[in-house]
Structure formats: C-alpha cells, structure tokens
Length: 465
Image: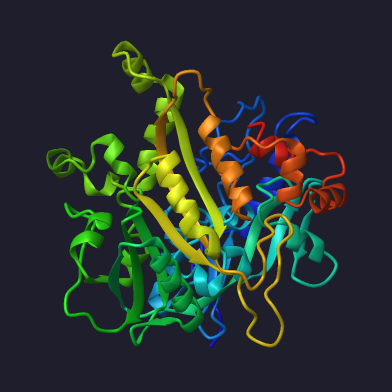
C-alpha cells in the first residue's frame, strides 16, 4: 500500500515559495519572526517592526503511510490536526505533546514531551528527515547522516535560531482504541522514584504492561503515577471534556479508561490545572463556559491579554496584595535526584500540583546507544523526570522579580538537570553556552546563517528578543 495523501488541496511548493518570498522581504537587520496566530511560549518578546514570515500554507498533514508507519507533515501543522490524520489508521506520533496547538515544527525546534517519553524519548527523536529554511534563505533537506547532518543534530532546542522546518517526515506508532489507566498513589517520594525506575526498566507494573507513564505530585506525601496501557476494550469510558476535571480524578479513581483520542488531550481541556485561574473549574462558570472554548489556546490568549493590559496586577495593587512572579517552567532532573529536588521545591517554591513525566533518550532498535543532542545534552542511558510547574508566587519584601526562577535554575543545575527554554530564563551567557551547546550552536550558525539574520539562541531565550 502506498502513502495516503491527507490533504489534496495543499500546494506545498507554493507555500514554501511564499515563505521564502516573505523572508526575502524582511529588511536586513530587522527581527525575523513567524506570523503565527497561536503560541505556546511564555517568554515576553520585543515587538518586531517588520512583518512576520508567511506560514499560512504550512499547517497541513501531507501524507500518512500506514505500512511504513510514517507521516509527512508541514512544519506549522498542529498536533491536533496530525492526530486527526493518524488515528483513523490506528497510528499516533511516537510522542504527542500535551497541548493541541503545539506544532510539530515547534516541538522539534523547541522540544516537547509526554507520557510515552520514557519509551520514545522526545519528539525530535522520531524525525527521519526535515526540509529547513535556513538563515541564508535556502531550503535544505537534513537527515541524521549526510551533508547536513550537523544541522539535523543542532536543530532540536535551537528555537528558530538556525532555521524553520517546512516539512518533516516522522515515524508513527500503533495505538489502540482505548487507554486503561491505573492511578497509583505514593506517600513517599523515594518509593515513587523507585517505581519509576522499575517501570522504565521493565515496562510493566504489578504484572501489567505499561505503554505510557506520567504523574502528579500534590505534596511530598501525596503523589500519583498514572500508568497507561493501550487496549481494544474498556468496561466504561471516562469523559473529562465536560464538567469532570481530569487531574482531580487521580485522587478518587484507582482505575479509569479513556478513548485514545481523549487520553492524548486529557491535559488540554483544563490546561493541566491552570484553568482554575480563570474560574473555569467553578461548577457554575464551567456550565456557562462553552466546552469548545475550554482548551489551552483560549487560556493562553487570556494570559497574553493580561500581560498586555495588567488588569489583575492592577487590582492586586489596589487591594494591597504583593506583586507576583511568574514561575512557569519544565525542568529535567536525573531520576536519582528527583525526590530531593521535589522536596526542595515543595519547601522553597511551594507551588502545587506539579506534573511528573519520566523520559529517556530513545534507544535505537538495533545495536548501539541512544543518540545525544548537543543543544540539549541529556545523557544517553540516563533516566530523567520532567517536572512541570506553572503559576505565580508572591514576591517577598526585598526580593526582585525573577529571584525564584533563578533559584530554580540553580537547583536544577546542581541536580545535573536541564531546563526547557519556552519560558523565562536568567542564565548569564557563559552558563547558557555551557548548558545548551554554545560551541556547537555557533559552528552551525556560521554555516547556515552567516549573516546572522535569525535571532540568536541566547537572545531569544534570555534577552527576550
């Protein structure tokens, strides 16, 4: 069977040419930025004076090959649209990030993670080849080996500083109709860490297979691992797109079942638990808030409006409340140091709940070790836990905005971990280069963007350009 064309109306070559023309139209010295309607970044950025790059025609799935288990996907295609194209074939991307409007290109250049990451690593590890618009205005096809292998290796975590993916070919994995969930409670973080290690090593727990794993810490004395098994049968099927709220179910249901589709988007309806900040978890508000508008991109637009107009901040000042620091981060900590880091976090930062997602760099199917990626240098063979925390904390008297984030950065580095760069970062350039492959980045930058038309990685991640 040959590849199945998904969207017959897509003129991919025309869309790429439109992108190239819009890139050429940006005057030298002006900031180059994508003209996207949605974003999952939490870094405030300077306002560009030039028009954004036209990516309006690059949001589709070009084809799915159910035999080869691959898909050709345009760079601005959202995972929501990609999943809609692959599920009818009983397939899914190896890793599906939690939020519907994350794009495939964004997850590869900016990293992504989800509950299959303890088996399949990060989204960029399932990429077979990419077409990339470089800073020199050229389209190059990059693969793990060959002429442009250096760009392929440096692209993950480059955040658009080395180019933009226009097409990606990715591997797909089989998925079944339903997902059976076990919500396993732990009252001791060391026991939780031991369980993660066992599941990672054996891909099972209590004699049952585990296909996906994540968890939530409500406090050091109450945490849950959600162990998921793909299945074709389910005695009942839950629904967390209506009045029920997914993260609360972990405390009351030892076992649960979801459709594969609803499992993939279980965190999106309430933006994990962050919808509570907008009142969307109040029973009355929830009944009035249309279900189609209870999704992450809507909440993100509300956050951007608050950043722009500072309505809540002004009300807090009028009421005499302290200013608040945004602490929105995902960090990877080695498994051995996870319990200690979580106890420190609960004691010092005091935010709850916290998301937990184990991961390892993807092991090859044949002999050999996992591949390392220079701009996000996790150790092959090492198990990490992604710890996600998203909210605000009051700024203590005498402290400065950013102090808590700096403490987190220091604690993560002390633990031998790394921090994702989609949100605020405060590293000095020397530390940043050491943590994020500065020497490799500069070498690849000089080859593919010799005039430095694309904003640098440090300038994007730390200087908010």
